[in-house]
Length: 131
Length: 495
Image (cartoon, rainbow over all chains, first blue to last red; front, side):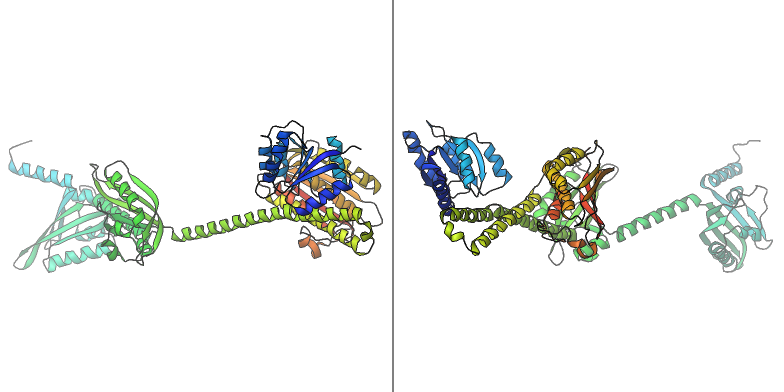
């Protein structure tokens, strides 16, 4: 099966990052990944990457609850950046609050809402949807 | 023949005129001859015929027994013997049986220290007396009302001075009547509420306002603040000139205090609700995220370090994590029901919902050889939330199957009826039954199980009850061990 080129994880939880990275490696999910600890860090780094059009992530796994800039704020900033490439965004959150799920539906560029924990199957599904 | 210039004739006419107009009759008594004469008007007052010939004995029989008769007897005797004038207001009973107030006046004419003649007047004062007495009664009633009213009442002059106050008002303020009368309403009003009162009083005095009602604060003798409802109106004379104010002051302090307590409780409850919401959020997010991490890490261990999982401990850790996940999910479910405000209900067809539930567990029903009979009018619709109704129905069906008698397949009977605003859904099973004496109170509690069964979470009925109540309904149960259980689910009819 083909794999994704660049995956991006935006999450403040080091355990999740560790686990997600390991799962991606184990499932041969992508060639490389980039990790940001909150929305602000992600925006700061993604902006030049997207402008340059080099090494732009294909898939973003976005947490909601993060310090400094949360997932919603990130999305509001993210849509302002001009992109030359289609990027698939998944919300990946522990929150099963229907309010959050409803809110995610309002964003056009969100492909799906994934409730943590993620498993190999989750990654497989993403792979199928994306490729 | 009419002779206008005869003075005596004129005098008699004048006298008759006066007698008739003023309802005053005359009488004369001669003690020597015992002769008693009544004028025509006197006879009219007694309501006897004009040819009636009175004597003293008969005359006295007209006086009302008791006070009136005794009074007139005494006065008449005194008049004859002691030569004293009399003038008394007494009651007679007329020839036609009417009670009448009269004024009887007697003046003795004395010669040689002997009463030779008594001249008197007899006046009908019935109307006047009755009116006066009625007025006095009304005044007494009013005074009593004023004095003993539970609400504080006062008359206040145009300068704000208390003219008269009642007991209740004294009690409210802690002053006695005299003390209050030396004060003005300004002295007793809380400084912050004075402006409002002045404005209202001026408006009333200038004729723009007839009465004024407000909740305001006063200060009692001890210097404490009193909350009261004031109703004050202005009294004007016939020419519209303001005379004084009449005020009713209802002490609200206790009510105010208890309503503050209620508000305090309300705030506490709201705070607690907020904390509960926070707690629910912690459960929903934080606990879940920790559980998620644990679960994910275990998956990675299994893939990355399979050699470390081949022992007794690893499966137990895995089981514990899985239980943690279930508990968090349950707590979430419970919290979600309790937190949800303004539940959006819609019209739900009961039979359709039932059929939907059946098809979702049809495999279970077939496998367990359960027989289900459903008697629900296809027109019955309830007010509900689809997810709740599904969960309620499924929970009762699966429970009935789970807690069947061990040796025989489950048998479930379902029917529904409408009772006014309610739809009563009856779900009867012929299973193990529940000992309600032992478990009745715990039946719908959290984490209570009554049967040994591998899937028992002890949460189903708790959640179901919460969902039913969230839909404005209630639940009842009847059960007999070894005979089965019937649940009565009250739901709101859709109108």
